[in-house]
Length: 124
Image 1 (tube, rainbow, N blue to C red):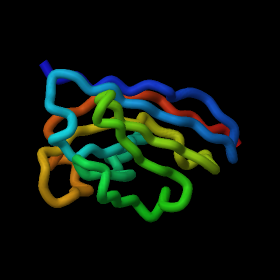
Image 2 (cartoon, rainbow, N blue to C red):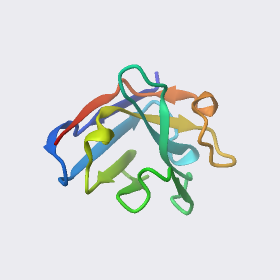
Image 3 (cartoon, helix red, strand yellow):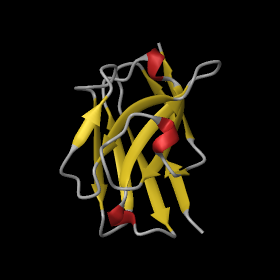
């Protein structure tokens, strides 16, 4: 079955950096657009960034543009999120998700597969 497993979350001070990873299995990873979302307590799931199947196109939420970078390694079935200049408001559970190829989407309902999430906590 399809599995997306996030890792790399943790506790970091404001201004610090973290790199999240998402290991994919059970699907033809190179055929899927991939995205990162996050959800803070009491809030809706929020789009962060997405990358096309071949890595040629990316899109970012305004809240993270210039601080976060999405990348992928299709040979390793891996998705990454480099997060720099972290802020307390970045605290959330971070999820990776897979979307069948097409227009890059910011809408969670267009993503077919989801990971279980990894907690990121940024202290002030």
